[in-house]
Length: 528
Length: 69
Ligand code: HEM
Ligand SMILES: [Cu+2]
Image (cartoon, rainbow over all chains, first blue to last red; front, top):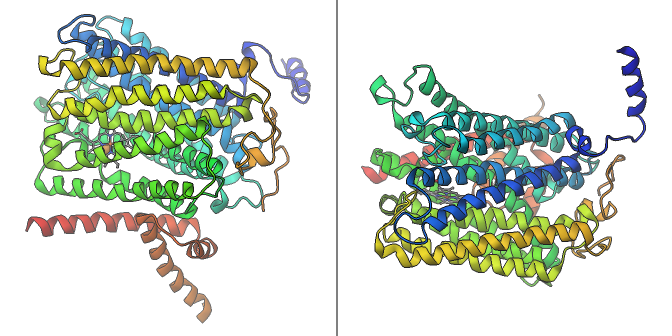
C-alpha cells in the first residue's frame, strides 16, 4: 500500500490528469466543475421543460385529454422543483465556478475537493426526483411548495422528494461556503471589496442568503419527514400541530430563495450592460448597497405568500408594507442600468439583447409582484394564473434570460470560439415573442379567476389557454435552438478574438488569454 | 483612549447609520462611499445592517399600529 501511495504521489506533481470520464469524476478544477454544473442544469432545464410541455398540452383545451389529474399534479410539482433546484440554481453556481476565480484573480475555488462533491451530489438528487415518477403512487403531487396535508399523505415519491431536497440543500450550502471563502480570502492583491465586479458582489451576498435559509428548508422537510414516519404532529391539527406553521417556515426560506435566484442574475446583467454601453456601471456603490439591503429585507416579507391563509390585520398590513418597500432598492437597480445605457455608445449583440430584454420584462414582473402584495387584490388573485404570470416574468424573463445573456457573453472566454451571432439573435427574438405569448395572457386568465394547478377549466378560459399553450410549445422548441447554437460554437465556432467585446473591463478579459487556460492566475495579477 | 480615538468612534457610529440608511434606499454618493470604505470595517456594516433591519421592522410595525388605531 505504501509503495502504491508513493507511486501516485510522484505523479501528482507533473501535470497529469486522468482522461476520459475519470477526468470529470475526479476533477477539482473550477472550470471543469463549472462546465459540469452548466451541462447538468441545462439537462434539468430540458427535463423540466418536458414536464411544462406536458402541462401546456393538457391545458391546450378544456377537458382531460392527455394527463390524468394525478399525473398532471405530479407534472406541475416536479416541473417547479426541477426548474428551481435543478435548473436555475445550479446554473448560477456553474457561472460562479467559472467566473468568480477569473474575476477576482484567484487560481481556483477555495475548497476544490468539496467543490467536486457539491457537484456530484446533484445527479443523485436529480435521479431521486425523476425516479420518483416510477415508484408506486408516483411522484410528489402537492405542488413545489409541498404544503401539508397533501405532502404528509403522499407515498414513497414524497419521501424521495424530501431526501432529494436534503441533498440539494447540502450541495447548495457547501457551494456557498466555497464561494464566500474564495471571495473573502483569495482576491488578487489590490482587488478590494469595493473594486470587485458586480457579479462577484451579488454572488457573495447570495451565498450568505443561501447559508442562512437552506438550513431552514432542510429543517422544514425534516419536520415533514418525522410527521410522515415518526409520529410527530408539527403540521397535523389533530395532534395539536398547525399546517400553517409549515407555510411560515417554508416561506421564510421561500422568499429569500426567490432573491437567491435573481441576485446573481442582477450581477450578470450588471456586467453586460456596461460592456455593451461602453460606459462604467452607473452607481456601482448604490448597486452594492441595494443588493445588500434587498437581501436583508427579503427575510421579513415572507407572509405575503400567505395572505389567504388567515392572519390578523396587523400581519397583513405589516407584510404588505414591507413587501412594497422592498421594491424600492429593486427599482434603484433598474434606474442604474438605464442610466448606464443613457448616452452610451450601445451595440446590441446577443448578450446585450437578452440583458435589455431582461430589464424590460423583469420590470413587468416586479410590477405584478407589487400588485400581488396589495392585500385586497391578492385575496382575489392568490392561487390563480396571475401569480403564475408574475413569477414567470421574474424567473424566466428574469433569471433565465440573464443566464442566456451570461452564456453568450462568456462562451468565447470559456471555449475560445464565437457563437453564431445571427442564430443568437434569432434565439433572442423567438424567446421574447413566445415567452410573452405564453405568459402575458396568463395575467388575464388569473384576473378572470382561473385557478393554478388544475388540469381542467371552464369554457370561458379556453381561448387564452390555447394561445398560452401555443406560445409554450414555441418557447420550448426555441430552446433547442440554444442547445444547437452552443454545441455548434463549441465544436466548430469561429476562433474568438482575444477581446471579443471591446467594452469589457473585468480581469478575465484584460488579464487572461482567450480561451482561459486550464490553470489560470497561478500567480495573482496586480490590480490597480 | 485619547481624544482623537474617541472622536473617531463617534464619527464612525454616525457614519455607519448613514451608510446603512443609504443602503436601504440604495443610493450613495461616490465620495461618501469612498469615505465609508476607508473608515468602516465589514463588521460595522454587518452589525449596523442587522440593527437597521430591526429598526426597519419596528418602524413598519409602528406604522401599522398607527394605521389601525
Ligand atoms: C418587486 C419585487 C417583488 C414583489 C413585490 C413580489 C411579490 C410577490 C407576492 C406578493 C407573491 C405572492 C402572490 C400570491 O401567492 O398570491 C409573489 C409570488 C411569487 N414570487 Fe414574487 N415578488 C417580487 C419579485 C420576485 C422575484 C424577483 C422573484 C424570483 C426571481 C419572485 C418569485 C415569486 C414566486 C416564485 C412566487 C410564487 C410562489 C408560489 O406560490 O408558487 N418574485 N411575489
Ligand atoms: Cu415572496
